[in-house]
Structure formats: structure tokens, C-alpha cells
Length: 225
Image (cartoon, rainbow, N blue to C red; front, side):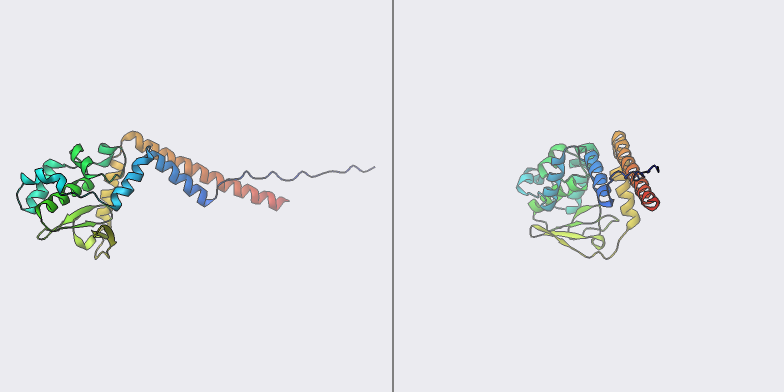
């Protein structure tokens, strides 16, 4: 009497996320680390789309300043809103404040500075336009000397008539932009947040390796069958 033998099916590979899932996981991890309070991210989008420029809010401050736009800019950058990273002021890598927040904090990066400067220029009746590049926003006014970061040839957008309008940059300076971005978002980040960023990236890397291993195991099982 012959004994029948049954062959058990090869073990199925555990379901694992695809590329889109891994990308979403990476963005979610980094997003939680960068913005523990998601409301700040929503506010920065709203504020960036419509910068809070208000001449009336700075009338008293404008009355104590002269009419030279270069001197006004120098006063804003050195005394009214001296430079400080968003990490230190708001606890996040990127935040577009309101004019009130910029004045109350008394420090901030280019976004805080440009709101105050543009409001003062408006109060003085000095024409200007708001320009933005890859990693900087500034007020361009007649007679302003160009700098590495503030030059209309690198501008990607102009805020005019209540909305941002795209511009075609004449010149890009990738090295300068990269150096600024690394300093702003990584070097300036608190040590604990950098460790959390690294941990989030490590988790995504482990998931990626696990996915590849599962896919290979599934293919091997199918071939053996």
C-alpha cells in the first residue's frame, strides 16, 4: 500500500509596503520630527501664501527712522529683527510668521526681517517688490545693491497684487543655496532633533532592506514551487 505524501506550499512572504508606501512612511516620520505641532505647518503655508505686510502697524516705528531705504534695511537687520534661525525662534526648521510675531520676537530669519522691512517701506511710501529665491525672500527697492543672496537674477517668484507670481531666474547659484540650506535646516537644528531625523531615516532604510528581502524570498519560493 503506497503512502501518499503531500507537499506543503512555500511560506508566503509577509506583505510589505511598496515604494509609495516607503515614501509616505519617510515623509510621515520626517514630518513628525520637523513639526511636532502640525498646526505650525498649516500656519506657515497660509502666511507664506499671503505675507502679512502692514504699514499701519509700524507707523510709530517708521516715524523714528529716516527715509533712506538702505538705512532702514540696516536698522531692521541689525537692531529691530536681528538674524536668528527658525529652529531657535519657533522650534521648527521653517516657519513664515506674521508681522506681529516678527515684531514681538524681536529676532528671526529673512522671512521675519522682510515683513518688517516691507511694512516700513510701505509706511514711508518707498516702492519695493517682494522677491523669493530657492532659500531666501527679500524686499527689492530702487537703488538697492545686489548681493549673493539678494539679486533679482536668482529670483523664482515675485509677490505682486496679493499673489506670488513665478519668475524665470537668469542665474542659479547651487553651491551658495546648498550651503545656506545645510546651515539653516541641519547645522542649526538642535542636537536632539538631528538624532530623531537620523533615526527616522534609519527606520525607512530598515523597511527598504526588509522589503527587498521579502520580495526575493517570495520569488525564490515561487521558483521552487
